[in-house]
Length: 132
Length: 158
Image (tube, rainbow over all chains, first blue to last red; front, top):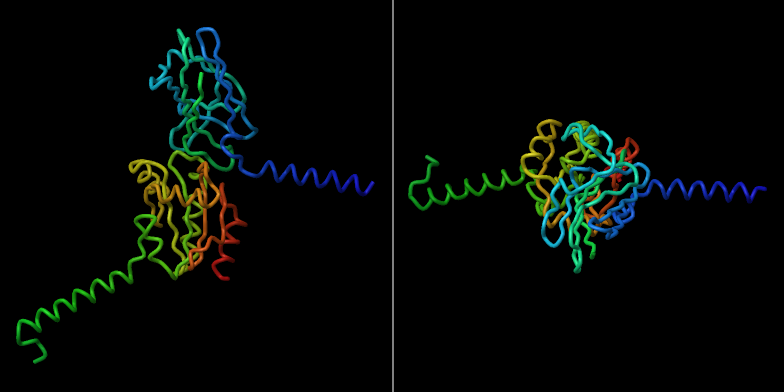
């Protein structure tokens, strides 16, 4: 019985420590990209307590910026930022769509993003490149 | 009369005066204008707080560092705040939060330093304490808590 409780305690301790350690950016914000008919679906997986700024997102395909009218955003949340006032953030895993025509040949998508944790730290703006 | 009579003596004393002036100015100057200046302070502890104006946790943390700076009164400690923001926004925050320690814009030296100190994806805020020999004795990514300030104080007295 003692060993069981000790194991449970150790697991709890390890889990608590793992949650407190800052995640590397690739782990903190995981993106997957799917090429759909006339659209690109970009999904992001969020960790608890982490958020991404909506207005810091930028999408570039082969050097061309995707205009905002071609982006379908998921529901965002209000966030009171000390410098920018009320801004929109994503705290939950979700997907957005870029409406693109004629994606027949190979393309490179660059995703620019910036995120923080609710009570700890921010990552400087990052970019991720994906081959389509 | 002590006043030098020939022009060579006059020039000599003038140059001596200039040298003394610059020596005294240098001794009194503890201002850090860029990351390389840190090397000039061999006998000092350096507390480096990497931050950015767009970073909310940094914004929340800085008033505590300002208070720490005001309260510590330790002549052997220099606090610097390299900023990963632009000049205008950085200056605005410095004014708004009444930061009295040296703040300058971060560049490639700071980037290399952070990478070498286990922060390759540049999480902010990141605070590092260097001892007088420039060895890292404290490092934290995220907001400094009371216990962190106590630990820094302890390190300063070791």
